[in-house]
Image (cartoon, rainbow, N blue to C red; front, side, top):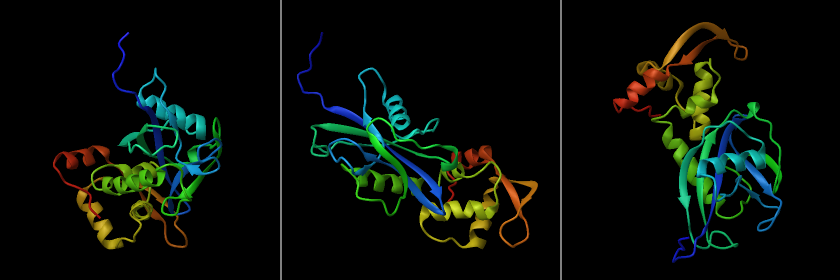
Length: 228
């Protein structure tokens, strides 16, 4: 058997899971049930086993600690500062995802004492370097609004223009001009109007739309972004 000349650091995965609840962008956190940082809130995650790849480890840890399953994960960044974990030299590969929170049943398991949603811009004090990971994920998420379908992942299959704008405003953390937003959406041609309508408050019913993924991909291939 070949032996390495250098010591091998441990590898972990950490997961930044976003959703929109009560009109705010929220993050999924667990309360640690074991040392180090016992009782402190943290991102879901854990150590990678010798016989599994990184994404498989991320999906396993997410399920084991929170009960969340069947999500599309995107690799975010690798964090490897030597002193980031008091247990020793630990390198973590982070992932992030957006999910509809009403489609998942949360349950704390393994070394997680509790699992809960928190506002992404006002999280509690986090263990390890997880605040740094969260801040990086927020920046990536907001940048991705321009060139991916990330904003549509939090919408039902049919949605109103108001619902679409609210998703973008929630992720960006600022209000958008209604007329300007709708004009840009119309010019891009990425929505398909349906014959259905939906009541929104006391106003007249609003038209429902579908997202045209194929048209969005064509625009992306041409380098046309979705800036707001």
